[in-house]
Image (cartoon, rainbow, N blue to C red; front, side):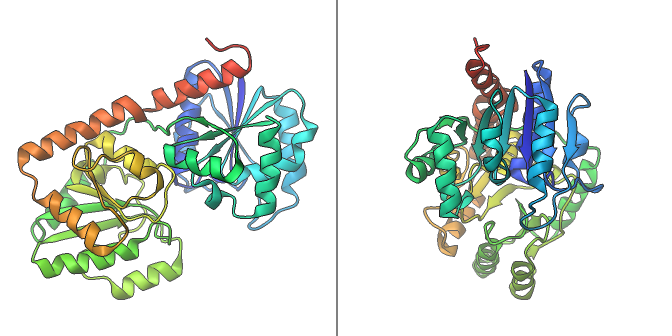
Length: 369
């Protein structure tokens, strides 16, 4: 089958990571893959460079904000490609909706990567999506029990649930530099935590500022590295003004996953999530996660088994889980690390995820097993 994957951008983020990994795996399964990015593909973007050479990348050069010119460009692109399957992600579907009646042969799928109400906050667009979902012109896919529940509430329609997956991560050629960086920090701190996320309201790093301030008051020597793009200036400025010295913001790193192999634990402070790819990567690396109960995270972490999950979003409860991690003996820590890796192998590998999309696309095309 020929499959077109549509995403608004290929900058580093969770849904974009899924599109790249899914495309690479589907092309290995014998499909023809085209990835369409609405926004321009910048030279400094890492993800496009990771696409399999057999995956063709098309950029529509969308401008910031609402861009009317994208509608005819997207229409011509899809007519030219003559795909069997068109698979959209996140907000890219909004540009496809007015064009759908013009396509008769293609089958359309959309993956909801977040809470359905947060993904589509405009009630008019939500109503328009619902019409196409109800008419089965678009087959919706959710990525976790939480996102599935939100979708059912938002649309009153059932969706196919396919849990997100990603490629197996391994230390890169730059790992030794990261290991040395962590060893330097351990001369001052007993525990090094890592938060891999863009600095944004959703990722809620303000909570980490409050938690690690309180951590200092306990006498526990621990620090956190916030690795990610400083996307929201107001959030970044507040953090820089208020953070203690044990909260560090080194910025975006091309080899961010190396820190999961070198740090003591992964900490996630988000207010909401669909199914964070960084958490899946932490599982794969055997890096024990400590997290807020953000959306799909609740479906991923079993408290005390493959990580620590706070009951709410307050500093004291997340602090309590961080302290619980530091109190693990070596045997308990090894058990939880093994459970993390097992969680990845059983549920979150890209082979498992892509296999389910392969089955779904083939079944609806009359080619499934």
